[in-house]
Amino acid sequence: QVQLVESGGGSVQAGGSLRLSCVASGVTYSPRCMGWFRQAPGKEREGVAALYTGDGWTYYGDSVKGPFTISQDRAKNTLYLQMDSLKPEDTATYYCAADYFEATIATMTPSDFGYWGQGTQVTVSS
Image 1 (cartoon, one colour):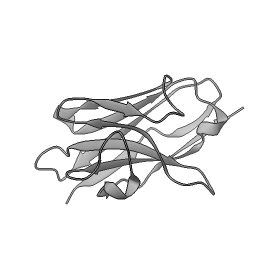
Image 2: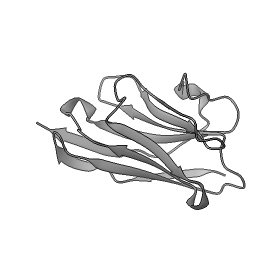
Image 3: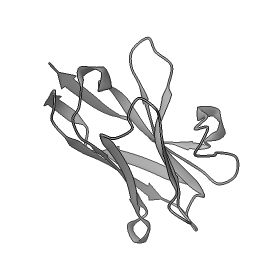
Image 4: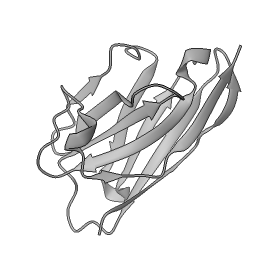
């Protein structure tokens, strides 16, 4: 059973940076697609960034293009999200997700991802 564990969240001031990590365990082979989502109170979960683990293609949600960078270390089964120039509107719970079959990076539809982490809180103060 695939398990995803996120870390790296915290509280920062606007303009600061954080790097989130997501370690996948229980995998016999890498998920085809992995991504980061976020959900703020009262809002729907939105796709932040995703990649195909095989060829490394990446895709970013419109709200985070530029300041955020998704990457992976396949040897460590770890997904990263480097977040720079953080803004108060980036405050949310950030979730790591993975899927073997349906998910695509261009759509980042949450229901297409079969595995989810527990989430890590990111709070950006002005």
